[in-house]
Image (cartoon, rainbow, N blue to C red):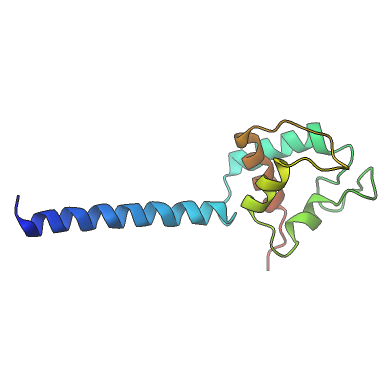
Length: 118
């Protein structure tokens, strides 16, 4: 194999890896939402979160201390990653739920789907 062929193959691999990394960052930012995942997140929110949180816009929550999901989605700095970290961390006023990674993804996608469009 010639030197130019090896260089071309190495360059193609490097470009493919860079593209894969950029796509992953795009997903982690929460900009790209999977519709199926968001609908699963809604189902989970109804089962687990609805007793305390307003899980839909303009819906009253059962607790004044628990913010609505639309308000959470519209906070500055709310991303899919920040939501997933929050969901995997114990908090004093929340039940200690064991949330699988795909469930955290689904909940984060649902919450971010409530973000007001500019």
